[in-house]
Image (cartoon, rainbow, N blue to C red; front, top):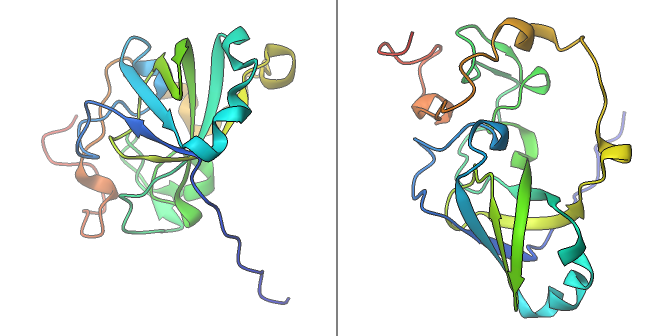
Length: 175
């Protein structure tokens, strides 16, 4: 099989957040629905915001810029055993792309104010898509290893396990 070609992405804006480190960030937007953040859209892309104020939720595609590793197996924040990275929502992954569904509150000039923030300050945003339930919602019971692991989601924060020198399992002080 031939090698895949290189893909280049350019950020359209940057997240402003109270989180300055990747440790201690909510692990999913659904687990932190009231945590505020802002997206500063770069001037070259502001025209693309036309009509966005009519949507309640947005999908932000981000580059997880603080990642140092791109392993194919990880111990995710909601489990204590390794899984293939594509069976997780872990931030340590090939290409380090993130997806956050946030609730839009207002747009003031080039700045989007939202809640549901699970992003570190300075996170580059590479795309914004409107969340449309008819397109984006699927009802399913087949959710793999997550089935018995979602109870701790509200308030669950990231820890140091996704760094280059991370241990093979969760930190000793985590149950």
